[in-house]
Length: 208
Image 1 (cartoon, rainbow, N blue to C red):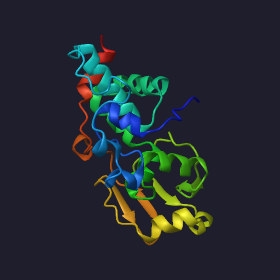
Image 2: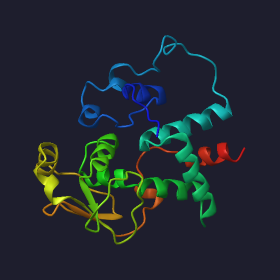
Image 3: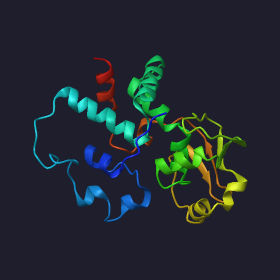
Image 4: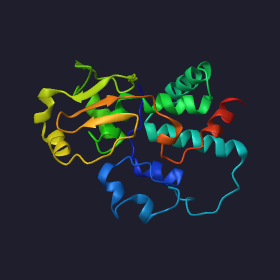
């Protein structure tokens, strides 16, 4: 699958907010948003035209795509699936994205960013219910136990992360830091998602 391989700080600057794609760097003075809080490119500092309604909807969709590291075709697939489910479409969409294995690994604190979590999952460092899973888009379910593979605990990077594990996961999952495992105890609610996302704009865009 195609994926973005350019400088990720440009993505944060384009969306005008921190997407937390660089892990610890995002919390330091080196963060691109703190240093250059304007869009990238030669016209980034110009005022430009007033955004249209479609442009606002498009930016919101792009922002969410970039937060979760999902390509357009896959994102549309999530939307179609959310649209077929009962309930509010926008909340269904965010719930699906939150249940991705790479996001769960990040939320549990086993990685400092979603891109790092995605790489660690692809390299086979995590298990779900005791079975190795290397698919970042794998959707966890209530009752699933996500853990670091025993052999991977000796990995220098994971050893460093686990030694300073201090993240408080969302209330829909529980963390056992000593065992390096997390349990999915419920499906995520809208209030569990702290990123400033206006999902109704995405629904409006796809409903045009």
